[in-house]
Image (cartoon, rainbow, N blue to C red; front, side, top):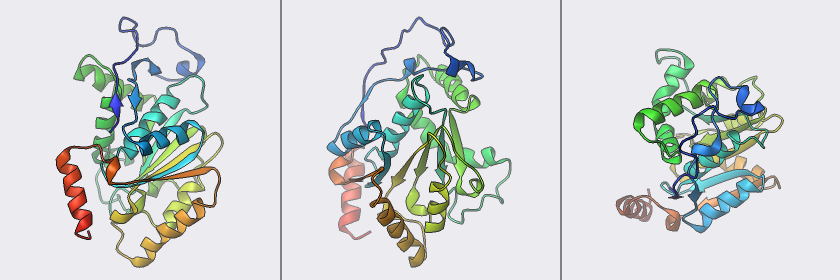
Amino acid sequence: MARRKRASAKDDQPIGVGLTTKQMKRKKPLSQEYLVDIDPLSDNQKQLFDSYNAGKHIVAYGCAGTGKTFITLYNALRDVLSETTPYERIYLVRSLVATREIGFLPGSHEDKADIYQIPYKNMVKYMFQMPSDADFEMLYGNLKSQESIKFWSTSFLRGTTLDNAIVIVDEFQNLNFHELDSIITRVGENTKICFCGDARQSDLQKDKEKNGIIDFLSILRKMESFDIIEFGIDDIVRSGLVKEYIIAKMESGF
């Protein structure tokens, strides 16, 4: 992931004290004070921090276990909870299943997306200094109830304009060109978009769909507003076993 420091928040200050205008708009206000400080662990992680802080739209792709999504989500949370940015919420967008159809699953859109929220919830837990699991559950529930974090599938974006938001498109390698094109054209005023994934590990079956990802990236490379950062083996920050496995997998041609 990245190096985590102890939170600098005032431990004796309860949530909700000294609310700002931005916080007052929310049902259960939160601020940055409970976020821990995260430092980059590799050069490309540092580049991701720098590009994000420079106001760039981002494509972060490459090996699994390099902290691409973690750092992007951390920076997005920091901005959304800040009182000095225009960002009001994070949209986490992904294709929920290989067929891109979730109508066969029971429940509402949120219910259907719940199973895919677990890894992101685990990331968020690492980003906050909370005294107990119960306190974190309350905090995470507040983040969702005040809509600081919203989970969307590509099936529900048509006709939507996303303003004052940070859009994180995760596992973007599993989206075809039409889906990627549809997502980026949803970006509205005061919105930043970040794509995270590994183009070498796509679940897409058709060569035409896989080539669409290459075409999409070729377009973004021509846009000055985007920084494209490729993560390699040296950027892997998970356990030694994970790194060893990924290296062996790549050497085996998978």
